[in-house]
Image (cartoon, rainbow, N blue to C red; front, side, top):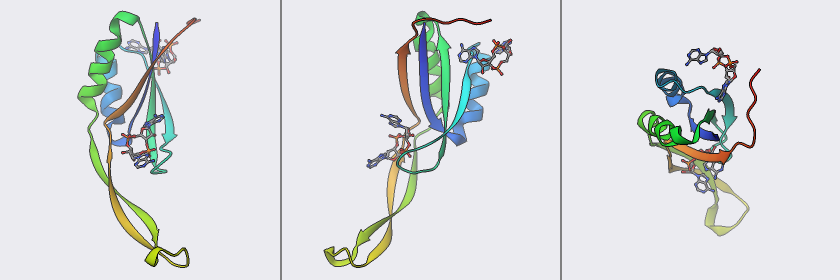
Length: 109
Ligand code: 2BA
Ligand code: 2BA
């Protein structure tokens, strides 16, 4: 068995939940926060039998979109650190960051 940990955008989380149920995958959703954007995202923990890993990742891929997002950043004016002006930068937020980790033991009672 493996545990899939998938960080996805909040906008995709309901669609992904429904798709996982439809494909008969069990999952747990955790509210999380991106370290860089400091905005909410959703982390799915999906316990899956080894032979179903690719299918589960396929469901994630099909339901999570890449999006561009503007972030306000600050930069020193004129190279000094005396004054800062905010300016927008665009980052591409991925559809999902997916980790697959081995599960030593799974008990369910
Ligand atoms: P839920 O996903 O809210 O599921 C609550 C209960 O609903 C489940 O109890 C199960 O009896 C039923 N259920 C879930 N998915 C189903 C489906 N596709 N078809 C029919 N019935 C379904 P438990 O199996 O005892 O799970 C309790 C909670 O533990 C789950 O809450 C979920 O948050 C977590 N969980 C269970 N198995 C998991 C797994 N393989 N990976 C990740 N989280 C899991
Ligand atoms: P955030 O940390 O809020 O990052 C959002 C997006 O900002 C990232 O999208 C990336 O395009 C950009 N970004 C992040 N750190 C950056 C940096 N130091 N410099 C420039 N741009 C940066 P994704 O890479 O698709 O990541 C989306 C979310 O997935 C992340 O939200 C984070 O919560 C999670 N994530 C991504 N890689 C991870 C990793 N290696 N470990 C744990 N979580 C990860």
